Structures are given as C-alpha cells and as structure tokens.
Image (tube, rainbow, N blue to C red; front, top):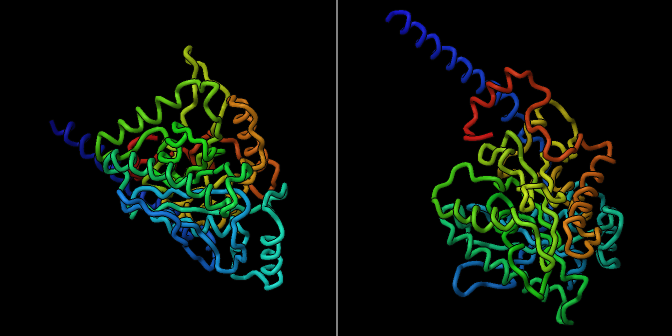
Length: 392
C-alpha cells in the first residue's frame, strides 16, 4: 500500500514538473517579442454600401483617404470576420491592397504609389504594381460559433453582398467581366463561411480563390453547440469530399495557420479536407495549408519566430499580410480554365513556387510537420502538455 502511494505521488510530481516546465517554454517561445509583427499604417475610411433589413448586418468598402480613385479598379477582395470579429479587421488587408502601408514611406514613394493607383488598372504581373480593393462585412460582432443558424444567416448576407460589390465596382456602367471574379479572405469561423460560398452558384460573380486565416477546416476544437458541428459536417465536409461536377467552379483554397501562439485554433485543425473519389483516392490538390511563420517576412528571424502568430494578430500582422497580398496576386493572375481540379492544382503549385523561389522566405512545403523543428523532442512534448489544445 505504501509503495502504491509512493508511486502515485511520484507520478504526480513528475507530471506537475513537466507541466510547469511547459509553462516556462510557453513564456520563452510563445509570449515573447509580441508576435514579431510590424504594424500597418493607413488613413482608413469605411463607406457603407448595403445594410440587411432582416439582420443587423452591413457591407462596407474599405478605402484609404489618400486614394484618389472614385471608382475602384483592380481585383475585388472581400474580408469575412469570424466569431465576435469586427469588419474593421480588414484595415491591414486593405492597406496592403493599395501599397500604402508604412508611416515611414517618403513623400516621393507615396506620390508614386498614388500616381500608379490613378494610372493603372492594378492587374500588373509584378506584385509591387498589383493592387486590389477590399470590401468587408459587418456581422455586428456576432458570435458565429454559438449556433449554426448564425452561420447560415451570414452565408446568405455574404451572397447578397457579393452581388452588391460587383455592381459597385462597375461604377454604374454595367457589370465588367474583368471585375466579376472575387477572392474571399476569412478569419477563423469566417473562413468556413467563405468556404461555404462555393456551394452556391450565382451569375453575378465567381469565387476565384479563398484564403483563410486560422480557420478550423478539419474540426472545431471547442464546439459550444452541436448544430455548429453538424453545419461543418453537412455543409462543408460532405461537399468537399465529393468530386466536383462539370458545372462547379474550381477555386483554390489557401489555409494559413497561426501556429503555436494561436491557443484557440491549433495548426492541425486548419488543414483543408482533400477531395476524394468514390474509391477513396485523393483527387488533384485544390488546397494548401501553410504556417504563418513559414511565409512571413521577418526582420530578425530567431527561435521565437517559429512560434507563429496569435489568433488576433494574424489579421493585422504586416509581415504576414504582405505574403497574403502575394497569394492574392498569384490567384488573381492565374487563369483558371474550365472546371477541372487540375486548374486549382496549378494555382496551388504557383502559390508554393512564389515563396520557394524567394530566399527571404522560410521553407514552404504545405501540409508539413507543424512541430517545432528547432526544439528538442522532450521540450516539444512538455510544451504541448502545457497547451490547452484538445487535439494535434
């Protein structure tokens, strides 16, 4: 009996030691250097375009006060916030879209960028001369993860808003075919709303690509209501486990995980489901999962950077949003021909190549090992033990 009690106490002491040391590692690798993100600066304006009569939802057009254009040109991008998220989170995404992101830019550089906004259409093959326009939806800071009916309401409003932004971009001259393609950027649960838009068809717009930031594609770690899980299973997983028919539009999906600093959405659940045929064979890849730390341009790379970006910072981090612009550029300039998954696979390949060919970025593989490659195995195990994730 005494031996049994001694073993129990010893086991408890060892477990407690591992747990406490894990917290030390969290302090060292996760809560240091404030995410290593730079700020994005802009003179932000939000112009109301549309309000829902049934729900207190709104659609805004993001604009910088220095932007002289009365009619938006360039690619159309819509930002969709997540659970308790705000439409104002689109600020950094919008600033990168027009290239006016830093307060330290010289007046000459600023004048040059403003001139390009006036004289070009934003469809340059060079990412430096490429620009896009951001629209953002306001769900009134709604908790979309609390019940599925809120997700369905948001999906319907996004569908209505997509029609509105295409009309707004035409500037009263009728719909321009060049502007009918839209790229969606969703944060957290907003990424699931964006992904669900592929189950809808509309003659007014085409979803060319979806970029998600810390979105739980695979499963929701902390489900509050069973209807949310049913939504993910019936609306998302069922559709994306089937081979697309000839009538469906192919859209590349790029999922970006915050990393270990994101204590709400672990990297493992951000991986997008792979489409399979009836025999269970994987079809051509139309999606890719990336770590924020792999594709962020960091000023002084160190061991702390591999911890990634937390759940909130991922929407404003200047270093990451510059890479998101690069992805938008690739998706926008890649001509998706037909409705076959091979077109999406080519887009995904180009996204990977755009980072792999640039020495300023870390190794980008997609669906890689999300563990800390610079940590010893025992440290990694204890760090995981101190984190609140239910699955990895």
